Length: 243
Image (cartoon, rainbow, N blue to C red; front, top):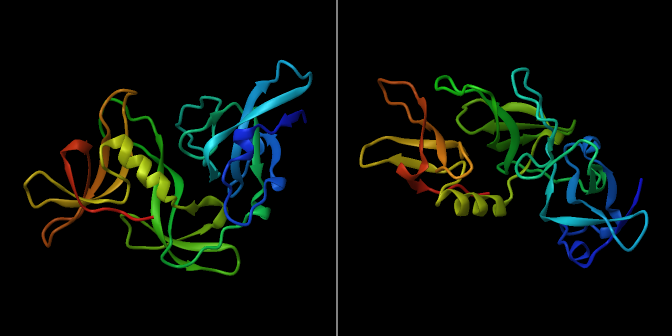
């Protein structure tokens, strides 16, 4: 494994309370597992030092999420380490803190998230798309499992702790800044009508296009809840989500 230089900005990265920089390790991206704390990524060789490489920190440390595979998804050959922004080739070097050294203390009613897949039921592009699914943790079992009620479901689902992570309030803020004021988990209404629902997903179909929201609209005594995708700027937020 090559030597990595600790630059000033990397040394200044704010790790979660109780986690020291001395715990940071280096590994290829393909070896990162759910629960590992992502700190930085290889930034190439230093021109003045043979065999020494530099690393740039991520905008903020974030827990990695295990990426479930989808049989119909297009394999791009890259790894989205945090399920959001950081894509890397499988052999790219990543700075991280192993999950065993930075365990997360979960508790009931905590908001959590995971990577999930959505396949549109209609439209010209029905390719599976990965997204961040959020829910509320209802129970913590001593065997390493947690029971989560994912947004839009009445049931709870048992899952391993390494498949989820706490929702970061900074991610909520980032979503609102990027989408024009919306976040996954918001309660919303549409126009002036009575329709009310829950935002399950936010995404941008093209790099410069407006954000779209996948919303689960509430049912009525006569109709079942229904799911729809709509331009986010047509929605009104009535109850903002909290991390």
